[in-house]
Amino acid sequence: MDQDKAYLSHIVIFCFDFEKMLDFYTKKIGMHLSDIGVARGNRICFMTFDEKADHHQLALASGRRGQPGEGALNHLAFRVPSMAALRQRHQALIEANVDQVETISHATWFSVYWRDPEGNRLEFFWDVPYYVEQPIVEPLDLSLSDEQMLQDVLSKYGKHPSFKTMDQWKAEKLKSYA
Image 1 (tube, rainbow, N blue to C red):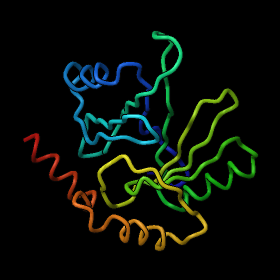
Image 2 (spheres, rainbow, N blue to C red):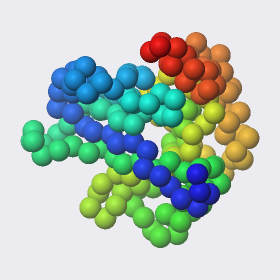
Image 3 (cartoon, rainbow, N blue to C red):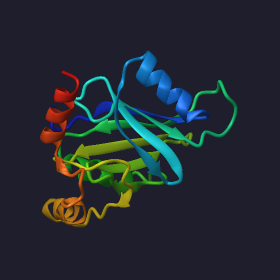
């Protein structure tokens, strides 16, 4: 992955009927469910076609407002190759006076969210080398060193029953589908 580039990684869709959408994407489209839970008061699930490469390529979130048939994009996410690249993207957004810049730790990835001029939500993120059952939504302090942020994940979640390296998580998922 080029050190200066960000790559489209996943899309999150708000749903009117969460169960119907989950059923559609897993049973009819064939995506694998990685995690499911509640974040910010909405049910959310994470799905992928390729567990060797991605924890999720698509996520669904309950809580859709508006009218059915209008579409319901929650956000577009772009993977960056390093924590340094995430910091650079964050700084560039701040310097450009971009609206609603928010830093979040999901423990399995660190994110910077923001809104475009029409209010669409976007995300840059860097993959942490650990897996912890999702969803996790916590503030991320970018003034800390990379080591301090990773240590924070370890201290909060290292004893959680789902905690493992991302490589272990991927290997287990591959075995379960073999």
